[in-house]
Image 1: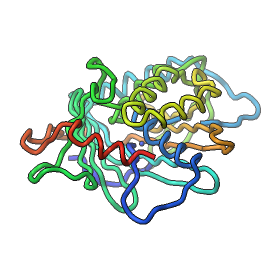
Image 2 (image 1 turned 180 degrees about the horizontal axis):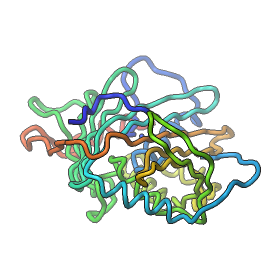
Image 3 (image 1 turned 30 degrees about the vertical axis):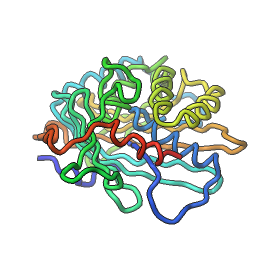
Image 4 (image 1 turned 120 degrees about the horizontal axis):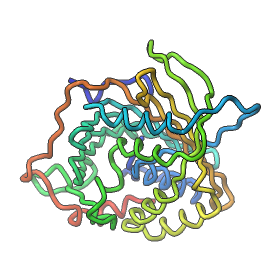
Amino acid sequence: MVDVGAPGQHEPVVLTRRPGPPVRRSRATELGIGMMAVFVAAGGVVAVVSRSAPPPTVSASVITTAVARTSSVRSAAFTSTSTASAGGQSLTVVQRGVLDLRHHASEVTLMLSGEDETIRTVGKVAYLKWPRLVLPAGKSWVRQLPEDLGLGSSSLAPAGHSPSESLQLLRGVTGDATVEGHDVVAGVPETRYGIHLDLADLFKRVGTATGSVSPKLAAELTAALSHTDLSHLPATVWIDDAQRLRRLTMKLSIRIAGHTVHDVTDLAFTSFDEPVDIGAPPASETVPYASVKDQIVAMVP
């Protein structure tokens, strides 16, 4: 049985503001942190990688094959760190959890400022367990549907709460893959590839989801991202000898309010095909998203 809280070899994320003494942050930092939160939550992790002499290239089919092979496993554990920084300030969020890829289910624990939060997805429904939300007695979960974020009933879990959607983002690889090197991680041989992704559609989805919570933040992020080529974003992936995705790193740097905001995420998959059991919480313990939306909106920068 995979332990959701067990550390992995590589350490994505709904990020919101916590109660406590006010922290003064520049608007650029707040936007960067907000952008990282909704972007990673949308299943994305976005790296501006500098390269010298061009290394050998291979067909991008090596990436799509790895996506198919990884998606076919029964389960996997994952860990991730996501960091937003701007103006000398930064914030790091850690995610850890397990995926049941056969049943489109996942459970994610978010660790930020010493308090854990849980997001459990089963099919198209996400269940949020956030200690800072004030819920009626006997209730501990918030039931969230794609429609709650304006994503439409055809979407999977709202805002892509499951990192398994990051696998599908790799289907957007464009051009060839560059062989950047070979590594051994925890005794597992892995080949490192540099790739470019077309994530324009993802960012449209992020904008829709963000706009349902904070139209102002969505407008500011859209304006900032309008100067970024979202159809050719660089990323790095590690693939093992069994053609499974082991790690994905991406970075995004944009200019907001005269400041450069850097967002970095490092996502890794381990413990393939171990037994997992992820089910929906009892209906008697859940409340609809609409009943707490005002609380969530108040937490967004």
